[in-house]
Image (cartoon, rainbow, N blue to C red; front, side):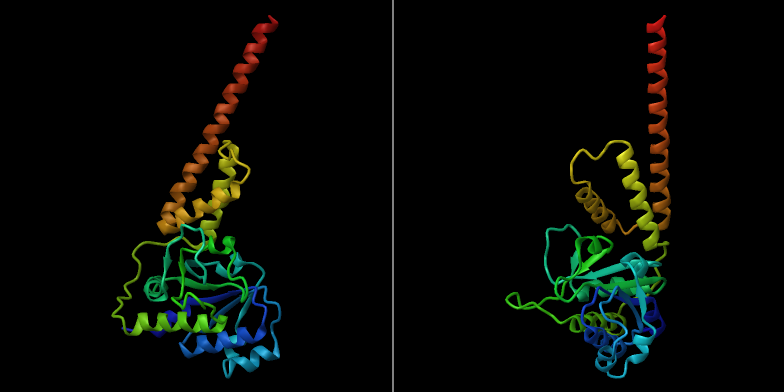
Amino acid sequence: MYKPEILTNVRVVLSHTTHPGNIGAAARAMKTMGLESLYLVNPSHFPDPQADTMSCGAEDVLRKAAVCGSIDEALQGTVFVAAMTARLRDISHEVLTPREAMPLLAQHAARDRVALLFGTEMAGLTNEEMGKSHVLVRIPANPQYSSLNLAAAVQVACYELSVAMQYAGLSLRQVEVEPARHEEVERLFVHLEQVLRQIGFFNSKHPNKLMQKLRRLYARARLEQEEINILRGILSATTWYNAQLKKDESEKEEERRGKGEG
C-alpha cells in the first residue's frame, strides 16, 4: 500500500543550478507528486523572486529548501543515491530507466533517507558527482533531441517514483540490512586512498581514475554498514602490517650497518 510518509525520506538534490526559475519549477514538480525535501548545492541565485514565480504555489517547498556548500553536505545521511544523467558516458555505473530505478529508491526510502541527484542545466553532473551515486538514471528520449529541461526531468523522476509506490504493486518491505550512509562510504574512500598511497599501490600518474573505478565497483555492491566496518578493519590491519614491515626492514638495515662498522 502507498505510504505518503515514505516521501519525507526522499530528497531532491539540485547541484549548481544557474537559473532560479528552474529551481521554482522543480519545486512545483516535486509538490505535485508529494515531495517536499529540496536540497540546493551552491545555486547561482537563491532565494530569488523568479523562483517564487515559477513555483506556482510551491513556495513552501522553496522556503524549506536546504542550501548546501557541497555535494557531500547535501547527501549526508542518505543510504541510496540515484543520479540523473542525459548522456551515456564511459562509465561502469549501472544505468537504469526511471521506471527501473524508482522501485529501488522507494524500497530504501521505506527505512532511510535517499536522494535524487540532478546536475547543472547545461553540463549535467560531473564525474565526481556521479561517482557518489549508486545508480545512474537516464530518461529514454529522442536520440536526435534528448534535451530535457531540468524541471521536466525532475517531474518525470518524481512521477515514476509515485507510480512505483502507488500502481506497480511494489512491496515496500523495509530493507532488512543496515545500508551504509553516504558519509560512512566517503570515509571509507578517504581511508582506502590513504592506505593505497602508503603501500605504493598507485603506480600511475592518474590515481583519481583508479579511485573512480573503485567507487563504481563499491556502488554496484550497495555496501552495508557492517561491510564498511569490515573493509575499514582490513585497511587498518594493512596499515599496521605495512608499518611493521618497514620497522623490521629498518632494524635489519641498522644491524647490517653495525656489523659493517665492526
